[in-house]
Image (cartoon, rainbow, N blue to C red; front, side, top):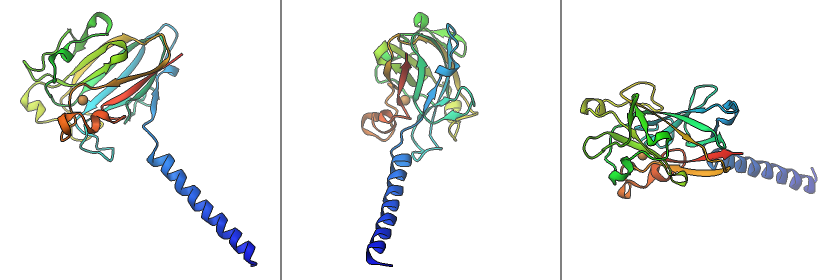
Length: 228
Ligand SMILES: [Cu+2]
């Protein structure tokens, strides 16, 4: 082989390796969580049904001890480790949250008040509720809050000590003590990205509990994409 051919071959091989490394970094390491798309499920004028769960850990991730939300894929019914979802603008959204995590008192009892839902109500195991007093009773695990549209829904937790000592140990949870919280709200008519978050300082082991899962997309903070 002549020198130019050898140099050329080496260069091509080198670029192939670099290209492969760049692909791995972008595709696997920098890729964010997926978006669960509910727009294809939406029939005109019909509500969109969304199912989530919050769980005491995330054993499917590389942060197994972080608390997390999961979203159920509407087609496959598989739990997806993400907090990103997409809904049609102006649609009625019926939400079910399975509350598998134990209780943590709210930093401010104000966040125990339900707002922004139809009737400013959530249903805890079917019972209409307008406020959850997490200081009077250990009754809230996380919140589902979209500040941009004034939505705040505290997600009820199991209340007994026995249940709190017996929480599901592998997430996404499929069994174990939990509550079923349902509520409805209207998606904004204006398309865009609407940030949502949990307001319980549930980042155990982080400063004031507000680090870690609390500020990481895919765990306790996410985005609702409103598609036009
Ligand atoms: Cu939380």
